[in-house]
Length: 521
Image (cartoon, rainbow, N blue to C red; front, top):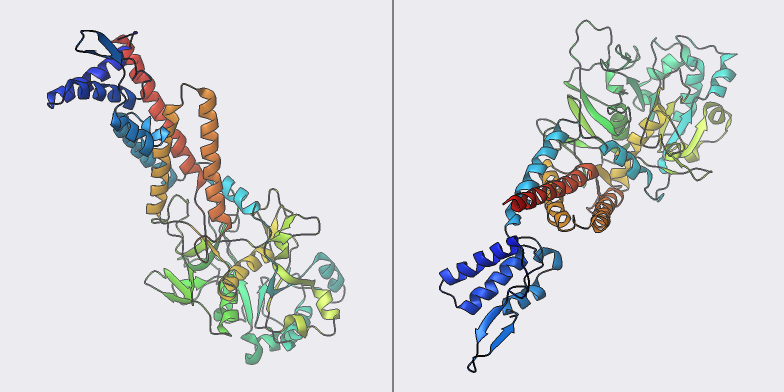
């Protein structure tokens, strides 16, 4: 040696040197192999050992050999891969697998924070590239409507509109031949007068879809709402919403199992095991006119298909991590449709191509141009009537802090129809096996990169920030753009980021512990 060498480097050199000699190699080969052993352990002392070789004139020449295998490593291996210690590969894999298992278990327990935050954030930052849905017409029962018509026709049973006004509205709309009219209003008493005749008319009632609501034991509405007593249950759909633990609506119901409560007064139930949601029933009625309605297959209704469009139900077992209630039914993620309003804010209220109030419809002489073959959604955004306000991913940073049930139902109808009619992408999640693979890959990358930089905190922070930023960008691209045809993917950022950082932290801890133990030896 021309200079001092550390104990760790000396040990690695000796191990490589005598391993080669024991294998019957030459001294020069053993020397080169010992230097490579130091280098592969990430120790910057592989040029310190020297080989003393006698020449014919008995003079000693000191040289450092550049082994051919070392040159090949420079050509064919990347810098960071070269610096991964040979013996630490198994440690990296072990730490990565352990961190992956821990992250997956935490996600399945539903206690990993931050996932919904990034879901909301990615939903809000999408570019405004969609136009309002031209198949939708929304008729709002506004507060001005309620006040205006209250003077002449006071409504009964706390309804927003009297039966006579509702009759005039429906009659005028039906004359313009819409495909379906969804009435997002609860009615608790049989219709009277002209409205009764209209509802009982077989030529018109097939176009009307009403609502009822199952009791929700976990919410304030524990009694639910019965369907209109004079309407066949086949013309009624569920108005229930699914909220996550933060109170935000990110999913929509396709079907839901009838609750088993013989003592309840709620008559919202059919003769089947599952009952269709209001949005699904309205969409089916619209699509059936073109023979494109969804067909449901499978024992558990796991296949819902219309042409090339496949609704992939969320499955609590195989698409886990997403903490779901034990829902006896079918649900999918809701890919909200939005456009910028007049103030350039992203608003869910711009879902429909046209939005009117009741008085505007009744005062307009000719409405056929914007009603014929459309989906007409009728409801009230007024708080305290039939449409409670809900939170959406746009409640923070959007134009609407709270969204009325009418517009959320319109969003759900639009998603189901546009997926078939316009091939609009559906938002889905990966199978849990692919989810686990993503977490494992990020864990291995973190365990390989971060330990190489822990001696340089500034470089460590920069490299970690670049990697996490790149990971967010990948998740955002899959969330915004349909890389897979007709599909946007929600790849959860938090578990992959946690596995990346966690695996790296474990490896750094083990490395520091190993160095501390070597000093004491």
